[in-house]
Length: 382
Image (cartoon, rainbow, N blue to C red; front, top):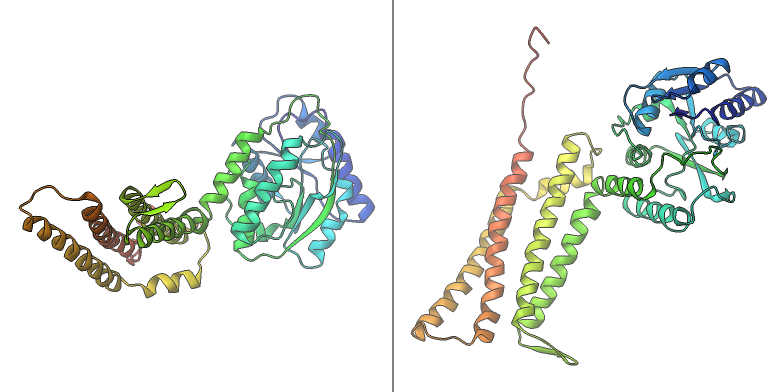
């Protein structure tokens, strides 16, 4: 149990946890990971026979990670110290681990939420939305992505190298467990009203954004590549339609101005796509995301030489069209031009030139990330 000034409810939580161990015949310990309490929580825990560890770094995730490192059990059951989760009802979660699951999530959304236990905004919007995003981005089948009561194999979670120290630790654990292909299970639980008289540490909007930001940063495919492909598709559609001439949609007239917008969408989309490839590759090299053999094989198939040839073809087409347009202007004596005709020809060619140069630079950047480097030997002092 992470603890920060939980004197009002900590004793009840410890008693419930002890009831679980005694009634179920489980050989276990009750560990309190203290995050700087000053209200007598530590004395309460010590008097009730709990094992107290001191986490010097502030944060929900830091306290949990410290407790997991100090724990000695094969399985760990975690939950808050505010009596919103009743540990004496958690035996089904332990049974899931005994039956082979690496992680068992509690699910409040399939269980019961007692009156006053969860703000309506969290219940109707926050938790369902974040859970839905997690299911979409990472293929996680759990119905309650951010439930605070969980059980898991200690060695499996330590193997994930979790690094966040705040509330987003809850998301990091689930995401990295899924990416590491750990086996999941879930059990419906009851969420009770917080037993404390003071406001909770949780800040819904701030912490919700931190969870969402963490998920986005660990899903470069959805953050960069999907929007990039969408922008390119919309831009290409606009270019193909408007290259033939002006079109009317009711009272709306789409002309070269829209053609220019389409070109910008294509260029932005291409850069977003390349950014997604860079982020995914760097995340793998830095150990942030696990190695993806299919992604690695696909990227390596498109070598720098192939990309340069493709970009050179685009440059020749775009440059040829640009020079042809310039020659036509020269033949008119460099006089006034019909912008609807000239720009309709010029914009697509300039788009190809921009894409070719953009692709060449990004290709070299991508190749840098693939350069193999030797790790320098350690000095005697190290």
